[in-house]
Image (cartoon, rainbow, N blue to C red; front, side, top):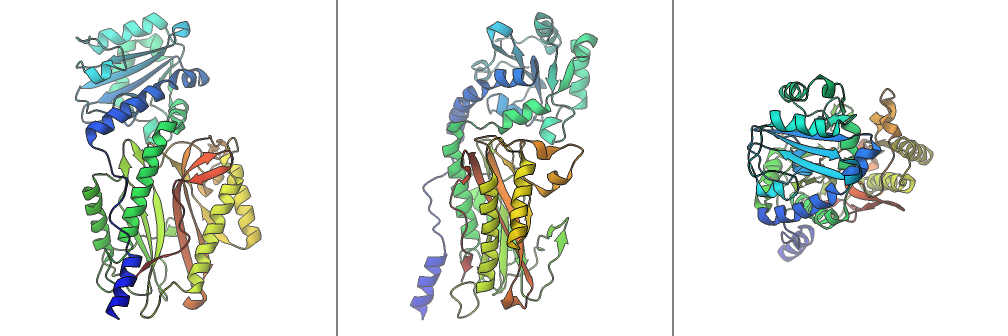
Length: 437
């Protein structure tokens, strides 16, 4: 009996060893500098597409702009206020000018940056007078944090320094920023795939006998276990890991239309269905990942048939979303077509997929029930871009016979990238419950 239990434990507990591991900081900087060269090569075309002749990103000491590490070398910046200026110099192409408080060799490899920098009050007006751009784009007026990140003090400084004529030419950079951040470069994919693999590894270890002792382990224990696993792997997270418990006979609490996160005091019991929402941050990229597990009852070797049927419904929803997605289609069309298919199949479904990449909730086309209903901004009219990353995030609600018809949420979230054939998962999706012995 002991040998049988040990064999089952080994089968159900993922290995802690993985082929991919996070990179040392020096190696990260080397690779991200190569990525930055590729990313800068996209800027002039995007500026011209969006009718922008000058784009200014402002970084403040102790208040880094979220764009800084994505338009400038990913280094710590300690200047009181640094400016990274992109100028459409017409037939001379793109000029990249850094107006910083201190000279920095890493910056001078990518920007015109003198060894003895001039004060911004002197340098910025000269750049403006040389080109007199019709439109100067700043991080203002956007609907998301990364598109409205300019501080009030920096706004006052720029308008005073550039003068009234230039100030009248300032426009929001939100559309330019969105396309810049939603444009993935091929060189990022190998690293990102490794990050998704590591995310999967950590989640499988959490939802296993390595981290869970039924009747003893609490939701808080699991959350703390995940924080320690992040520390061990030398990666960060961009949000607090969430755990949800569903149990036969228990009323599911909701929060803003979703199954509520379980309190940290709750204890994991046999027969529970666990859900985890988790993501990592590394190399200026972010993952987002949701998976389901079942805690085996005595004598069980698999999840009940009703639970497996519920998971199959969510897989059908994933299949439909992938099948209806193609580059150039609007997010709203994909959402409506997918939900119409679910209605025909009799599946109660909800879709809230969002772009991934430089942010966890990134900019781009969201295939999301809230966007489909938000007519005043028409985000559902945004078109899918080939190569973009997305978190295919969704759920279905299915009655479970073994639970006396009680409905079960099966929530899945998988990073994917868009090809001509639709979304492709970075790693294979979950097709069976993780089993906790």
